[in-house]
Amino acid sequence: MSEVPRVYSGGRLKGAPKRRNTARRRFGCGRFLVLIILVVFAYAAWTTRDSCSIARLTPADQKYRVEFTDLLNARQRIAQSAVWQALPESTPLARVRDTLAQELALPAGLPGAVPDWILNNLFHQGLYVTGNDLAAFSDVLVLTKMSRVGTLIERLHGFVPGIERDSAGGLELRRLPDPGLYYAVRGRVLALSPSRSALVTALALAPEEALGDDALLIGHGAAGSEDVRGTLTLSEGDPAGDVFESIRFAAYVDAAAAHVKCRAKLRPACREQWDALLAGVSPQRLVPPPDGMLVVSANFGKSVRDLWAALGQGLDAPILSEEEWVAWESPAEGESPGLAAFFTRLLGPLGPGIRLSWCGLDVNEMFPTPEIVGTFDAPEDALDRFVAALPAIPEGTPEWASVPRFDEGSRRLRLPMIGGPSIEPTAGPHRDGLLLSTSRTAAERFLDSPGPEPAAIPGPGNLYVCIRPYACVERIAEAGRLLAKENLIRGHTFDSFDAMACQWLACAAGIDQVRAIAAVDGGEITLDVEMSCTARTSE
Image 1 (cartoon, rainbow, N blue to C red):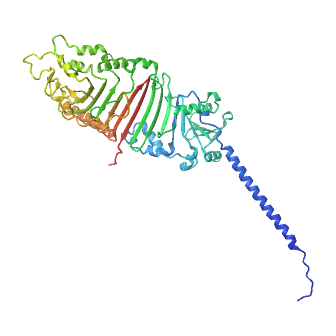
Image 2: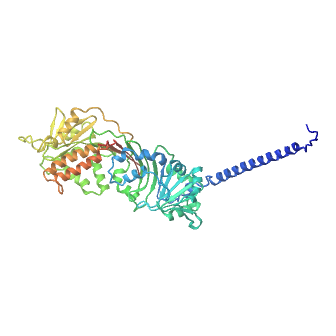
């Protein structure tokens, strides 16, 4: 080996500090990166804070306020419900179904539809709709609350083509030309409207002009299972404003039914007009009517005669007056009671419970004749007292003569008419009251075999109505075809009426039944309506 001495300069010692400096620089960069991330998160948290409430942008004097509780998640369920299939395609409600079923398109210049995850973040909470124009809804204002992610997504509007900026004097609106919408953001609240002035008004509200959080909660109450709920404050001249001061409602749609509940406050002038009917009325337990295609059960705390006169006052219909009733029940001196006197004398004192049922249509009579059956609350001796007041039947009176006849054995009262039994009024005791029918055939069907008690009517009320549309339309179409065949329907041949009847039947085929129960309580009316349907099968 060479004897040349090697000299080391101590680079190892110099290198150690250099490695420590590099580590320090790396540590400093990491801290700086963490600091940047924290600043970004802090900025995002600050700019997406919940600094504004929906009530703060809701004018206090709006006539309607509606909340869709979970529209985005429920829209497919609602759109696919059999309820829409039961409605004609020409009805405006069909557009509601189509709107719910279609996807929301992206702004002009971008292909495709808005992804569901974006919609769920933009419309994160309930959707509130408010405005004043109840006729054309020209000033509708839509309010919702975005999630933090949705708020950040909206911040990127500047990078999305088709969204225009409108400063609006510092209010900073955005405009979507294609759907014709304006929108603005306050905190996490997203406000949209087709009316620029309505949106500007909402953004420029003074605190005392806004609705306030408490009023918003009181107006709607706690959310339940309903899809939509709301309140209407009506003025005279608004749709239904001449009758009601306010209406509160809630609705739910599922796979095969629609359910609507509402509570309406009558206007003082309307309460005065209907005072004879509604004064002192409270909800009652309603007795189910006889089974039929169209049934009614009512209890307004009045006899049939008083109810007739009260309806005449409310409807301003002279034919329903007390004077007309007296004229019908009072035949000329020496004459036996005819059809009008038979019904008015027998029915007058009955009640307050009244049940009516359209249970059939006899097309084999001289003229298609509906079969109507009614049951009434009545004292046990009501029929005996009526029979005792009848004049004696003169000797030699033929059996077909239109004179009331009472059978002691069957305890049935009938009034013979020229024609078949389906036009022969018949009455007899039934359960705890009295049954009266326009048809002896129908009356015997219920009197001979009363059958089990019909299903109870849910909840108290004053008026219950239930209709089976297909059965009703089927009977009407059957009678109409017979009349059209004899050229007895003006403006229709048999073929034209048959074509129209087929359209009616097609519309009614999807509806099982519609039922409603109404109650009167202290100047307010509650209404509960349910429509149950069957999905149509494709042929």
